[in-house]
Length: 206
Length: 206
DNA sequence: CTCGTAAATGAACATTGTTCAAGAAGAATC
DNA sequence: GATTCTTCTTGAACAATGTTCATTTACGAG
Image (tube, rainbow over all chains, first blue to last red; front, side, top):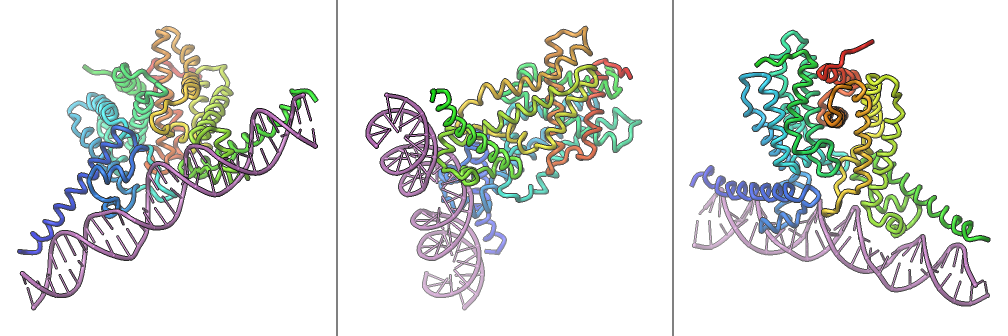
């Protein structure tokens, strides 16, 4: 048998278990929160040893970060699926998609934003970049709505708008400290976007 | 000697150490982040035993929550110190005060918002109420600026506005994922408040 | 001074992240 | 197919850290 095939057999198994471990860790985080994630629980659930988890992810943070990475990916995918035909509708769509994702995956999103590295190890560059990219998705529609503004200005505006939306949603979804009642969150968020756009001089058309 | 005096001697010592422990824990959180807080370190720094920390705060969460409680108190004090003469200036002042506090006590504020209770124990009611109160401080000036709006509406608006400000600041201050460059944060935040107010129909008057 | 109550202590324990030497499994070579 | 070499897997042992509690100590009351 040739080398490629031989290697792929081992690798397939390895990848399979890696996927399984990630899936299990994600389920733990999603259902019980990041704090409830334990190496032993993951290993047990995957019917493998503790050491194998370490072989695969280096350390515990490695596992968490892998889950977080996939969370940003999923979020980005969802945000990018928002139709880009009408910029105003797109902005609303982005805010709404973010809210939808945050509602369905509250603990996963919290894990992404609240997880702190052990000691003072730096936060992984790639995740950082991915979050920034996600947050930059409001840029394009805002440019279309504000063609006369300085592009640098719009870039800042878009990140700020997304940060604001993030704040409203993340606080609004906390069962504790209910900044905005959840049932109203959706319409209020739309209202917020409208208000802010109005302040920027964008007039509702259609 | 009478009872009051006798008791107060013991109580004074007790209170003194309690204060010391809180102070030490706060310094740990403030300088190295919540994750770096260890019972043993606190006990060592206070030159007392581990058990004494438990006597005083019940468990580790108890200590953290005590620090967090004082953090909300400090934040509220600072927010309430903002002059209430002119509502528009007050709103800017509140946003700016929040930014100032968040800059100076980033880790303490993070501890307040990111700390999760052990197991599924409920978040303390009183802290929750205090945070809500702090977030409600934008209500009064907004009512003055929007006298014709439904008060319920304004209540929601104010909490949403504060949540938005919180989001902009908390993401903006993260060294990692710099949603808005820190040096610009201050003026951008002011701009955000203006923009949003403009969207609400408030026109700048001097 | 003696007693009783309350507080302090820290060794021992429980939980959980981490390491690593030994063994198992798989690939390469003959 | 046997041998050898590499890689992965395992789980016991270790380390760090939150928690408990029997014992000791300190302090006020009578």
